[in-house]
Amino acid sequence: MKCEICGNDATTICPRCYRYICENCLDPTTDYCIDCSSFKRAQEEDYIRFVESLRRKIEFVERSMERCFECPLLKDEIMRSMRILKELEVTAKSVGFENLYDKILSIKDRVRNIGINYLVKFKMKTLKNK
Ligand SMILES: [Zn+2]
Ligand SMILES: [Zn+2]
Image 1 (cartoon, helix red, strand yellow):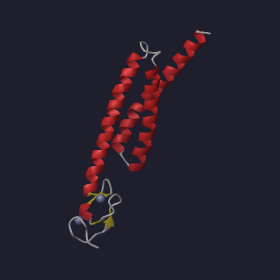
Image 2 (tube, protein in one colour; image 1 turned 90 degrees about the vertical axis):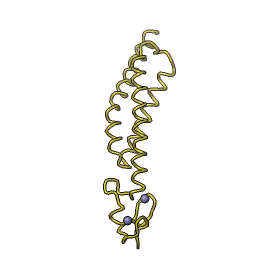
Image 3 (cartoon, protein in one colour; image 1 turned 120 degrees about the vertical axis):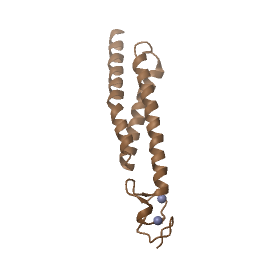
């Protein structure tokens, strides 16, 4: 088989586009062909930008905890962030997005602490109201 990108002898198949590719057209860090590799990198960068915006959101939640404790949005935001991070962590692991994975780990504990903080405060409040 010939490489479908450059025409040399193909050595493998790209797991994303299923084209025959040669060693020169294979990106060893992603195991994809050079075309799919740039796509994969762009995808990871998109995810990282998304986690970055999630971090800003969660920092805002942290600051507003006292002031907006009763806001239903606050709880939703915390729970949503925890769920999204968990899903992204699975994706990052299975696809091999190492940078994304590091980024997720760097804010995961923080989000969880905010969640715990919220639950503790919530419990205290309902106890007081009894
Ligand atoms: Zn090639
Ligand atoms: Zn490909």
